[in-house]
Image (cartoon, rainbow, N blue to C red; front, side, top):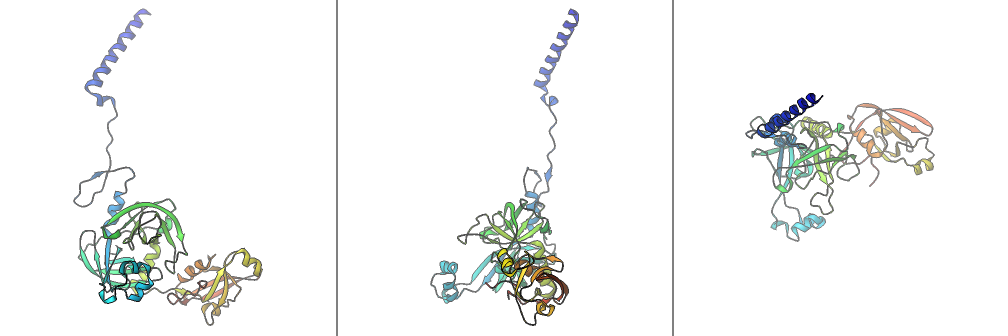
Length: 387
């Protein structure tokens, strides 16, 4: 027993001595080899950079080359316009129109096609006598206005430059969820291209008074004057929206509430403007109201959801289909509608002259009426309640 103990104690002493020698002379032998840190693809001419946790550099590098600055020269406002607009009055005071110089509107845009088509906001280029586009790589060129759609506040420009042009990849706004990380890329205050980050704060924002057709993505990514028409992208650098407006009490910087037009809607407008030079939308021909508990009780309605028909225009598609005042529209083409705004959006998305079916609750009877969609005239507001 004593001999066994001596052998154990000597072995332990030798092991401890060996550990001390190795830890002093070769400490790396006692620790796990360092892991190789992956690298992100670098911009052309730049050395690769080690990936940093929570970095969105790859998304920014993928999308930024296709985001451009838009400069639009516009005539100076008239004295009447200045007097009627507090923002213009603040900047121009009481100077006479002949003393004023033409304005240069600043905004952003996104190259969405190798053919040089650029998406931006209508309010960025509206009334412009000359439009120029500055690319992120420093190139500067004149732009031709292909078409505008004031009802969504979108416009399409076209530039002609030697290929290849940087083109952004479209994402799917329908897959966005509240809490998803997004980046806003644009030219705020004309300081140069800027990338800000945030999350999707809300989806489907409407009734903001920004445009006729509203279905905005709300984000807290900083969006400032000059960002209008720029890109809202996901963490893969794919375009999910066109930055359009901010909520601001002063008309100045961002307060953390910005709005973007979903990319799906933007590309529909793009396709129509490129193909036809205008956007054609469906029209029903009614004045509507909400269905709420008070209306249900007063009119003794058989349903508690849908859109109340207050008035039907003579010779309109609705009149020809047989709709009457007091009807409640519940579906159009199999798609449920629960508010006047939803009805406007669903009908507007239909092709004029196409055939569809509209579901109507009339008293206790549910009717399915065939409807030939009409052509909506811009900014008529036919299917929205009187303002």
